[in-house]
Length: 291
Image (cartoon, rainbow, N blue to C red; front, side):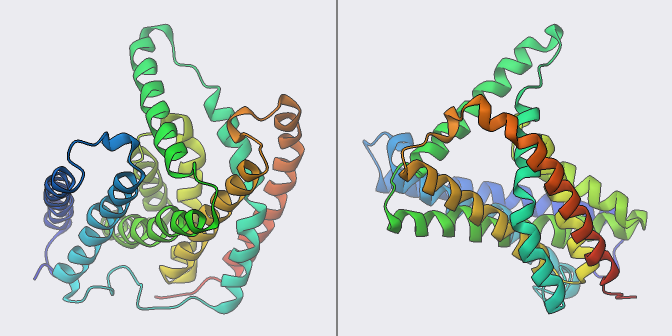
């Protein structure tokens, strides 16, 4: 339908699908929530919070991406290259890097949290902190149950679903769409990574999420398949959820980690950077040529 359309038309289609899906799914969900959880404090209801995450992730990330592919290629999975599978050796390297990249991302996250804006932007900074606190409280509510059944539910909601849905939208749709215009993989990867981080509305996690988005973008290009960044995204989220679960179950509050632990992050991050740099070099050497 839109296969031969120019970039501007495809971009308008992409934005229109995002807006329409947001209206349909957020509006429809509001009606369902009102009917199912009436006379209940929704922000204190774990079932509502989980349902919100599921509907939002599928409806506002996955569905627009699949529809865009259908309108452009007449198939749901070809535009995103999700019909291809990456080489097994590249998947094995990504599996290992998902472990070693954690200290580097954690250190950048700690540095990001310490950023303060100029006095002229105090109002904005306060607003950003309120948004950050709201996100933290919602996450704490969802992960507050330390039972194994809740762990598996959270792995589905916070690891598997976001990995699939967000990768279909950002690395599978937005990134190749931008690249179809500018013909520069590096620039399209970083633009998509910036948008990926902005859309989460968490300034104090902006830089680690942007760098992670860029890493996932290169995986999509080098692997010639969307499943490589999906695998990396899932493993990263999965390990984060499991680590937080294990610490909290042991009585360690991850929000109150001692300064001594933070200090040890720097040498760990340096080692992480070396290993990840070598691993990404190996991935680049094994990159798939789709031309």
